Length: 153
Image 1 (tube, rainbow, N blue to C red):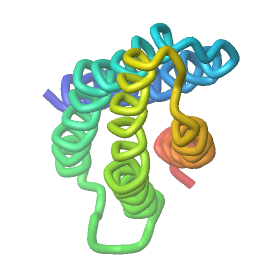
Image 2: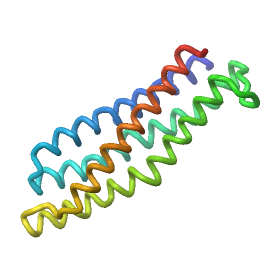
Image 3: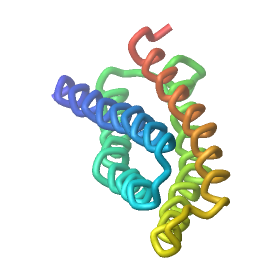
Image 4: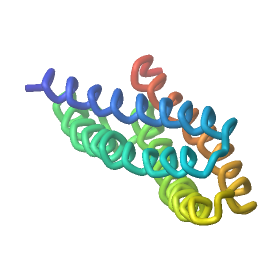
């Protein structure tokens, strides 16, 4: 059963990290060709990808991470690689919920306006740049968590 927990935890990490890295690639690639139709399609796809991959990945990471930690007797009561990883993962979640998700929702709304007018509103560029900066930060954090999980310093 312990190995099943580890597998499901790693599967969650693959879904989560794979989606945030590929989504960043789609988004940055689309930024080079800011046509309202394709920009709107990208913004909607980013939201869908979060629902299909990121959120289930998070659920698998959290649920099976806790079960794995318990099964292998890792302490959650002291400062170590595991608690540092949990803290960083929580920071990543807070950044996603307070900065990236609102940006994504604004990108959908603003790109929808662009569909109606034939041109993306000027505000879209500002929101997009904010997403790019904080999205980069929020991609590095889980990569650090992955390093801590594998190396267990």
